[in-house]
Length: 376
Image (cartoon, rainbow, N blue to C red):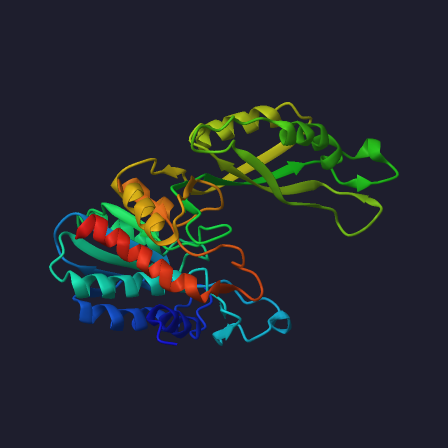
């Protein structure tokens, strides 16, 4: 095999680290980083394992960030090989976490090994922030480590997350930001009654339906040069008692806004309540804010990453803010330039998750190229 990135990725996949479990992955990483001169500092919070490892004390600080936790495997019978037994087949590495994102973490580590081997006295500092809480609630992971770093006045200048960012081939896309995510829990209150006597009841769905139709047609904004328009989606809608002769007394809806920098949560709340107030019903609305939008439009990190990608792949990567949230939302407010660049995202969270073996080594070379352009 003789590919250190592939070997490390396979070793990580073999650890059954279903969120929030780390299952020993971070210990394996620490054993690779410590001989390179990294100071290893575990930062557990609650059930979550976090690893902070830093080499050097001077600015600028380039942070490699990622997560060792993975989503559940899904139906085992649908996997062609066991999800936590890394398997090579037809030039592909199969296993849960191959692309999201144990392959990316492996590439970061081997890139540092190669870079430090050639430039042991590089300028600035290199750090790793690895959590086991990215695929879960994300309450005791990166956000808590960043809080601790801010208390110690440790400033991150550049952050490269190894999230799978590419669409068709390695190098075609960099995530230079993400939309904000706002989750709403809405209860519409009616009056329960017999379906044969609707005049003695108040059906919450019948009352809500005209407002819901307007809500689905609402244009929240038009986006901008960096972000697509804000989107509204219903995640869950339920009502009923289980009996077919009962008008239910309430309706529950879960929804999500993926919003651009053209809006903020308060504006969304105000506009949604204005729509709801037009209806003939009482309601209760509560929010859960997963994170604000962030954007790194230009700067040294964008330049270095684009140049490193082009040097290896010949591609000029697109800058994109599409997709879901990431832990970048916790790091960007510190003032750091934040990018996400990693493997293909075609099979993430799917049965038979996989990564191209050749891409693992090429990704390591790209990460090394970023290090050389920023810290050599």
